[in-house]
Length: 145
Image (cartoon, one colour):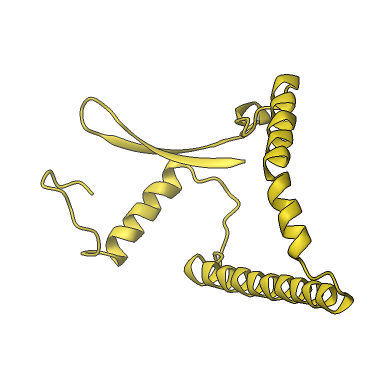
């Protein structure tokens, strides 16, 4: 459920404030990705096959020069696992710091009012705000906020 607050100004310049609730249904969703169709799948398979065919001579030349001894293969595997672990640890640290930063910048409200305001409560709130926060909000040349 969403809440919205609107100000309605009548032709004589009187402003009334109203609050409404509304639900956003799944009909309002936007499709983020188009499903894969057979033509796209075929094009993808052909592109991958062309890439493999183009890189095959390079792979064969590289494979002939590689040292495939057990020590070298073990070293490569340990290096890959260590690098992956370091990357995952760094990602986890950055994600935790980002969450902490967002909680600091946008803290959860201390008081949540589940009651939808009506015109009377909005008017009382405006009077309280004007009396407690006078001078905090600049006024426009026409005298309005």
